[in-house]
Length: 252
Ligand SMILES: [Mn+2]
Image (cartoon, rainbow, N blue to C red; front, top):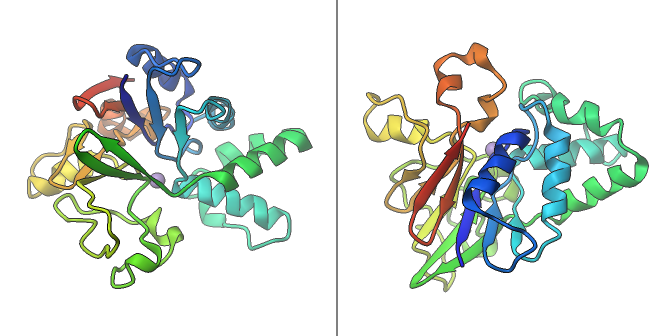
């Protein structure tokens, strides 16, 4: 039995299906656990298809899906559309939300409601016990609620956007009773962590990053449909981490 984590699929459904096949993950068996750390749509061409595929997978008790900032923006856009808020133009344009929204608009009312309920149900973080070690998985940063008021992060909305630093201890402001050994995140392409750790000399690669307290697994799959991004495109991969032995799997 193994524990796998994947993040930031961003519409790369073909790569995602290939990656699941490469790691031998079968949602219908009870053999393995799969954690998906958010940002299922936007950027990639097949965003709504990816979200539908992940929704189906998440019906399995061994598949655990978290919310990312893009999923939260999508949820907020749906609520705005229902007159429950203000539409987020930044999501639609800058964050390539139109890839998701335009296809969402064509869904049946039943499917729209299913997407909305699913997005609303996504938890913010999850604890993963791996042998002696306790990890927290979250999209970008922990949210401590009333157990971390001294921290800089006050809301879940801030936490799904926050850029962790490669060498920080994200639990230093946590005042709860758990003893976390590490935080596993997506959100920030790992080249950023390699670049900063090297003092700005190493510009890649997009490989899973292992820091003191942070493991980062977003290897830039959102760029897979954008050859015009040059080197960023060449380096883009979708990654899976097998937490048991820290083996890394990649597809592009
Ligand atoms: Mn993100």
